[in-house]
Image (cartoon, rainbow, N blue to C red):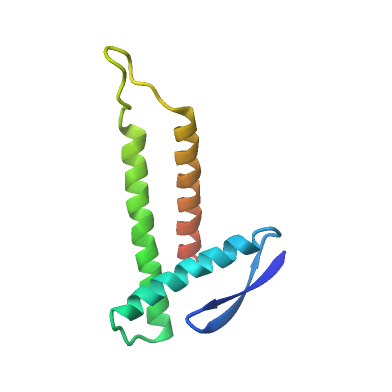
Length: 113
């Protein structure tokens, strides 16, 4: 298991991850930092815990919206050529499936204490 030190809101956190996932973990920390920066830009003088909670809520809201879009896309028939039955794109289905799994993984990580 690899150990990665990420920096969020000026604080360093050492986090374990699977070998080979270090860059991905750094990218996810960057996403958290991005949300914290947007909260700060609104002029919020919040403590560290409150900033992290607000960033988590922003990310959870984005995941919720992505799941809703994914659900709608899964159930929406694709336009078919005149008179033909709707055609499903297997590549699109695989991509949407991967996105759904990743969104669920992120949501599970956010729910962990």
